[in-house]
View 1 (cartoon, rainbow, N blue to C red):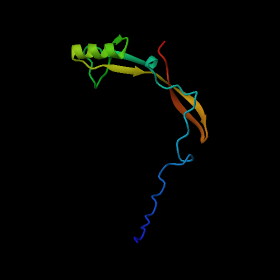
View 2: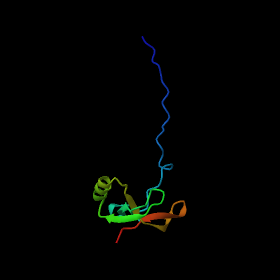
View 3: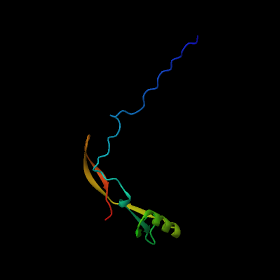
View 4: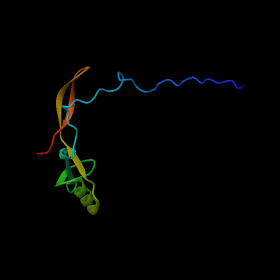
Length: 100
């Protein structure tokens, strides 16, 4: 007859509902493709001194043009600071603005 060995159970490392981050407010708008604008650099600009040149309509077009010309591309997102009430008190969050 063989003796049964008991191994201690590993502690539960799953975070409880109290320690997880609260869900993001529904009022907060996340960044979408409608929020992003795409630009090639202005002639003579550099990564140290960025200047926006021609705007392109989408990411694919800007990637192809940047590749063809041996350039880099810029993406631009405008953000607005808005107040939000959270469980732990008021705070300021950023909200991506759609281009219009």
